[in-house]
Image (cartoon, rainbow, N blue to C red; front, side, top):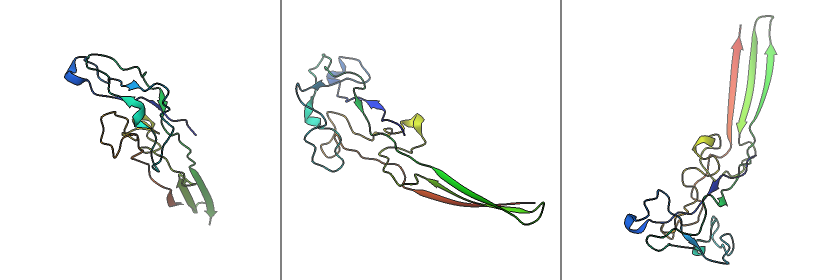
Amino acid sequence: FQTGFPFGVSSNDIGGVQGTVAPRPNKVAGCNPHAGLTAKFQRLNMSCFTQQLPGTFGNTTRNFLRQPGINNWDMGFAKNFHFTETLAFKLSVDTFNTFNHHQYASDVGALVSGGSGGNQVIDASVNSPASTAGKITGSSAARVIQLGGKLTF
């Protein structure tokens, strides 16, 4: 289990006068970015953010929001069958994301790439197309079952 990674909302550097890599927008006073959501995979109310004026910095801070967390169970079961003193067979079943819990992100095991929020899971740009702004747009694989056998002699 893991809480989601922190992230922030980005905006454009109009005219390139700020010279920053990730300019931040202004947050509308009194607006809750998690309230008033109607779409199924909507994560942020993007109307709570506005583009900052050219040459100014927005009032939002770095990484003030959290992405969805991870609830992942991997399990393995194995049985050894001994036929003789030197001959044995091992049968194993391994499951990844055993309970098929939705992981809204890149690969659950890829924590270096963002874990619960890598690969632009939440399009959090003030100037992104209205169809994806504030929505969850990616998920990791569903349940995976692996069957294995090993003969030792």
